[in-house]
Every structure is written in structure tokens, then in C-alpha cells.
Amino acid sequence: MTKIMRLLAASFSICLFASTADAQAPIATLTTRPNSDIVMGHLDSAMAIFHDKHYSFKDDIEKLNIYGFDTTDVPSYSSEVISYRLNLLESPIPLTYNQYVKGYIDLYAVKKKKLTQHILTWSSYYFPMFEQILDQQGLPLEFKYLAVIESALNPHAQSWCGATGLWQFMYGTGLMYGLKINGYVDERKDPIKATYAACQYFKDMYARYGDWLLVIAAYNCGPGNVDRAVRLSGGSHNFWTIMNYLPMETRGYVPAFIGATYVLNYHKEHNIFPFAQPVDFVTDTVHVDSKVSFAQLSKSLDMTQEQLMMLNPSYKQNMVPFTTNEKNHVIRLPYDKAISFADLKENIFASEIQNTQSNYAYYRTPVAPVKTTYVAPAKKKGNLYHKVKNGEGLYNIASRYGVTMVEIKKWNGLKNNYIYPGQNLSIWARK
Image 1 (cartoon, rainbow, N blue to C red):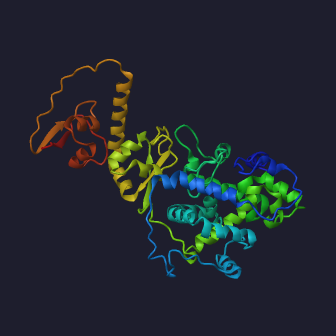
Image 2: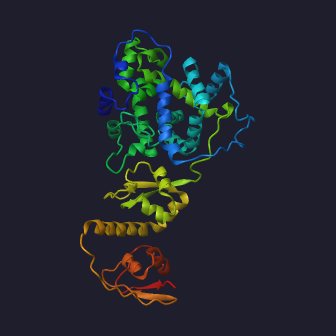
């Protein structure tokens, strides 16, 4: 057994929402109905914390409403039809339809319809990321629906016991799976890195059980509880057989997963449609090798700090922290802004340094600033020529003439920031 598996067996970190006593006490009477209120209450809370707080949506269902439903229609289908549709999904995960799953389908499709609409809305942004990683890792794509059960696709979701992010990792489990968590960064909220960590956990649990439903159950309650349920059931590795030996929440967790999988695949048939897209642009990532605040990025890239926070939820202080490891941090931006960042990168970092120094001087220096006499260079229409002196850099020269580093490089055909003493630089003065 590997070190990581021994740690998992001893103490798994994703918390239960049922009581510890319920998980450990011998079960005298088998229950026949999982507690849906625990699972759904958590999802309602996760959605409200972030999605409703920061964004407002408008219905746009004309193109999607292919069946011509009225807004008040609540379609209903027989068990045979629903079971047939689940089989059409052809998943390696056994998507069994039964009374437990039916209860969650009814919750997602009727009682919690608004929740489902929000999840559908955000799925268009998060699911392509999840699917790419799951496919790369050789895992069933349906695992993307676990993030729905865990967080309602809210990267800032946090449970009462500290489980955090889209995949609800506890602090210890996050560190165990290589996620960085400190005063500036919490990679449990990073959609990409946290998904890779979840995939590794799925692989570890499948190597242990050889059954996808038990992998899902273990993700919720930990392998210790699953092992106990297997033992109490007489050694069965069938979820439906061991279900009543599992903690209360886990009894509803797997049926909720199957119910969510069905409803999100067949939402049109149930007259459920997403709201207007919160992210209607293609995004890309760029490497950042210097400290920079979201305020500076917002100003330089002409986008709101709210957009930056939504696209980069793992940064705690609304800033990308300093790192000595080049390309250690990345930020996600709309594609056109990512291109702009590449062009403006040096100016953005220079402005951040200047602002930091100004703030430091303001807050740390209790004396009046030294008065200096500055004689601005004569300005005239047309271009000037500046002869580079020893120790001068593009930033100093740009500041002196009130222009940008990017402009100087453009005017002089420079491909990088290298300049040398005695070089004549063309400067187009402001009119």
C-alpha cells in the first residue's frame, strides 16, 4: 500500500454532513430512504453564496425550447422512459434507476428547478475544463457531475467543516494531493488544479474497489466508511447492497449523482433551461512572474475586478503574489485580454512596482517628502531623440517623457527591453 493510500485509509479529509455518531454506530434497522435534505440544502447554500450574489441572469429559452413547452409546464415521464434515457448515456458508471434516484430526479427537475438552471448556466463554462482533464486522465466524463453535487459549481463554496472549492477538498486532503494553500493562494478553488487532484483521488479509489459507484461513495465519506460498510454487508462491493451501512449523507449522495446526471442531460425534456451565459467569451491562461494586483490588471486591461475574481478564484487577496519561480502563477483572462496582457505585461508590472513604492512611502514615511525641482524636457510636435546614459532603462526613460515602454519599443523597432549606453531612441512627444 502506498503512503498516500495509508494516509487515506487512516483519516480521510472530506467531511461528512451527517453526524459522526451516525457513521460509526452499528445499524440495527436498515433505512429505505436516503436523506435528500442534507444534500440539497448544501447545494442551495453553495449556489446562493456566490452565483446570486455577483450576477444577475435573464431567461433566454426560445432557441432551446424545442418541445414548445409553456413556462408552467412540468413534464412527467414513466420509469421505463427515464431508465431508457439513462442507458442511452452509455457510461462506464452504472446509472441505475430506482426509487432513490427517482426522488432526486424529482428534486432537480421540479422542486429545485432554479438551482438546476443556475447549474446549467455555469456548466457551459466549467464542464469543458472538467471533460478535457477527465478524458486526458482516462476517467468517465460523468465524474464532472460530482462537482455539481459537491459545490453547485461554485468555486468559493465552503462547508461547515472547511471543505472548500468546486470539489470540496479539506485542507489536509488538498495538501496530500499537491494543492497549494497559503495566505495568498488556495488551489482548492482553482478549477484546473483541483480537478487534477480529484482525478487522482478517483484513480486511487478505483484501484482500491474496482467499482465506480464505490469510488463516488468514498469521495463523499472516505474509504474507511466504505470499507466498514463492505465488511458489515458480508463483503459485497455493490453500492445498493451496502448503502444502508453507509453514513446518512452518502446514502443520498450516489442517488443524487445519478439524478443530476439524468436531469442535466435531459433538461430540455423537463422544460428546464439555463439563464443567459455568465461567461460569453473564450478564455486563455497567461503566466505571471511578478506580483500584480487585480486592481492594476483591471485598470490596464479594461475589465472589472469582479471578472478577474470570477475567472481566478484561487487568489485570496485579489492579487497574484510575488514568486521567485518563473511561470509559477497563471491567470485566466478573456482571449483578447490575454493578448493585450502579453503586449502590456512590462508596463503592468512597472506600474504595480511604482504603486507599491508610492503606497509604502505614504504609509511608512512620517515626514514630509523632499521637494525636488524637476525640469521637464522641452516638448514639441514631432519626435525627439534621447541618448541612452549609463544605468538608464526603458522604464526610466518612458517615465521621463510621459510615454509608455511599449510605445518606445514600437517607435524604435525594439523586440525586447535591451538598450545600451549611447543608443539614440526616437521619442514622439505628446502634443
